[in-house]
Image (cartoon, rainbow over all chains, first blue to last red; front, side, top):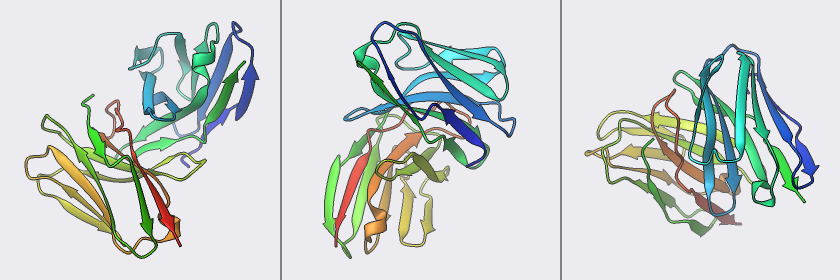
Length: 111
Length: 110
């Protein structure tokens, strides 16, 4: 889908460790987003970006930071992972007239 | 982003029955998008509605945007097992930061 890949696909990490998830797109889209999905909460926006070095907070940004030093990469970092951050993380890009295109997701488990 | 309420949360239907999910807002929406997520998959864009009273069809799926642009619905005629998944609405246009509804999970029994 529109050349968007997320890595890793699965990760298990220990509480207190930093974790970085990567979203990579190949089509030069300007708008990129990070969501987390948990049972009973649907998709919640963590951070988003409107361009290189242009990022902003979403609904649930506490404990997360992002960086976008290149158009194609949008990184999500958990500075010190907690069990409440166990979730499925989706990256998305916005395409004109085609809505959002989502990556396949990263399933993160914090133990 | 604007917030919406989706109902029902869950729906179980027999294959061949119809299904409808509703998306309601207390404020007027500029646009609304609909997505489908299969179990274990990622959300996939279905459609965007823009105009008051707009009705769009995709095979057995009918999407409506209310006259007041405060609600929207997705209706599936004669459900099939391939329709299983969670359907989300999200107010906003292509490059807005979308705030998704909580979704309606559809289960279809053969």
